[in-house]
Length: 457
Image 1 (cartoon, rainbow, N blue to C red):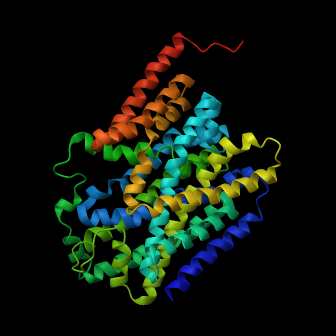
Image 2 (image 1 turned 90 degrees about the vertical axis):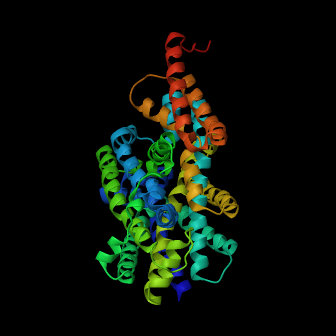
């Protein structure tokens, strides 16, 4: 029965993508839905892009073990990030008519900077996709007697197929379907957790004051700032989310959708957080790892409702992993493949972009098979090399300060900082990378004003 439910979610998603595929006539239709999405679809898709495995499974397990200090990124950090997108980048990027973030780098800083930026962005998106695949595989192992490797292969095949077919339009419609199921499933589980605790009053009373702290007692100031900076600043320039509002009908819709998505994300994200805070006091013998929430549901819910909840988890993860695969495909196709295929027709470019989705999925599968923590994968994806990306995008959108040399320096040192600081100053590596990237961008930007680039002779 569980397999039937999961298969049903897969088939519905595939059917939506097949419907969307019939309405795709070229690369722009495929990657940004022909810039035809309204407020509801953009808001829902933005929310769904981040409301995935790390929120429902990774973050809930961390909150159950550590209190809110274990879930600062989800839902709080990413909700703030969406507000930052609304204020800083959504309107301007949609107004410029970009298809990918790489287009911005090429127009603002030149081809070389675009290449370097995309080389940094693609691995982060693949790691994000790997986290979702790992979570999806773990859910399947809970609901069916299969090994994680088999579950990963099944997950990969389904997600690649429906993402490659439907593009952004298919993803956006699927996201509305998936997240509607997710919200209902989480509310059902919350009700049963309250019942298991003897009612709403006893459940809320069970939450200890220490669980409501946003930091650990022995945590340093810089480490605390770093833990907030990673989701807020590191994800501010994520292609997965940016592609959603680039498909909006107007710049105003792009900006307003970020505000709406932030509100939805915070409210809905508090549900698994509350479940974790309360359920940590239930004596069920559950370990606080990525399978905490699905195993909790299996313990508390009747079989029929558990089938529904398992499908809800699958839906949440599907709505995130499709975004990441499409993001990688868009970046790789627009930056590396299309310039080598100037002779190709729009249909040929579209086919190449779809095949790139499959390549991205395989890369994510390889990473997922070598990893064992969804939360760690997501945290690394949000911090690796994104310090330089954030600085060059935000500054580049608001004025003419800083040219290609400043951008190259910021990107290189931001990426290098992820390795160097991550090894020696792990507790605040991203914060140091961000400070270094900002400082070098400003310093080289001042130099560029004094020594401008010479025109080629």
